[in-house]
Image (cartoon, rainbow, N blue to C red; front, top):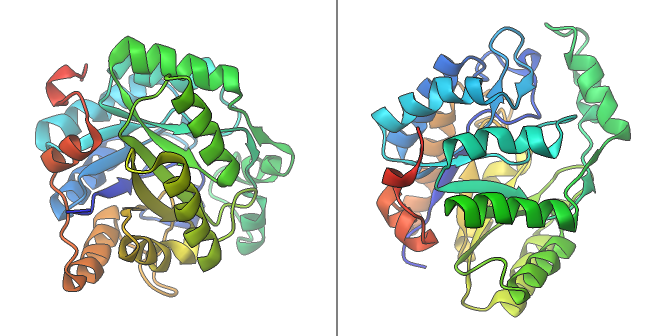
Length: 308
């Protein structure tokens, strides 16, 4: 691998406003933090949207369109829009914004899974908004749904329909085999952008053995046909992405995955996390990719072919 692509997941659908005053909520805040992250060195910006009044995750394409043009005007970073959305969203709701925006890149979870956020309830005595505690608690009895049919639909509508490519989010080894199934059927084409995810309750744990196992399985299944990236949640974020990079991966940081920039220190912005990982990678002689270099590595259609 010649250069490391830094992805930044700006706000996500896991953390709630009570957890950090620095979590971007409004379109202006999301755009501002995304632009700053790109200026700090993020080549890819992974984006969710939130209700600007309450901070609750929303799939509303009108909200996305309040910040996507601002980002596109101010930076040449690759925009990666979620198809995972947030808890309680239907597939049609999750696809509404990507189908409207026709981005270069979208995330695509490679299977259905338990996704437990409820342990975070124990950390807070009170919440700013009435929706936060029930939202976290309901994840105790929630399954994120992406069946084979759902994945086929996303690949057809966004992949073939819009020329959008995918960040294939793999939360365990089974998801790698699912991706190999779609590769065998020629519903996806190399280079595959494989994001190995660690530390989510319901997915693979953040253990070094699991990191190396994921790499071995991906190498066996995809050989030279894939680009590997690593992300991890919470306190595992920076150590794990560093280990990934040392083993040939690209990296993902951002307030979607962790609210911190060191032990007990809330990150004041997404850009702070981008600068932190760059300060680790560059002394290790790992150069970071520019947005156009990331486009070339991932085989993207180019920023002139989006609708924002």
